[in-house]
Length: 62
Image 1: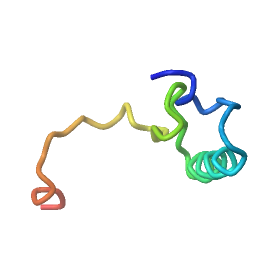
Image 2 (image 1 turned 120 degrees about the horizontal axis):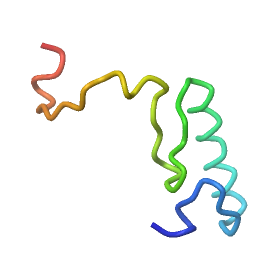
Image 3 (image 1 turned 135 degrees about the horizontal axis):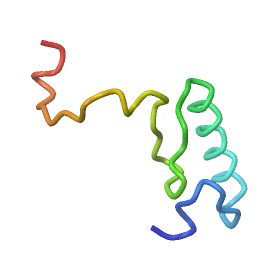
């Protein structure tokens, strides 16, 4: 990744920055935190409490 992927990058077009910041604000309001080097990557507040699973979608919810 490079600086353009950071949530604090200031060189994007104004509309792109506005939309990025809107997404970040909405996700943070629901308990997510933005990943420091990828504006599109979020972690939920309790993510460390859950195991990482590698399941096909058809098996989820059974």
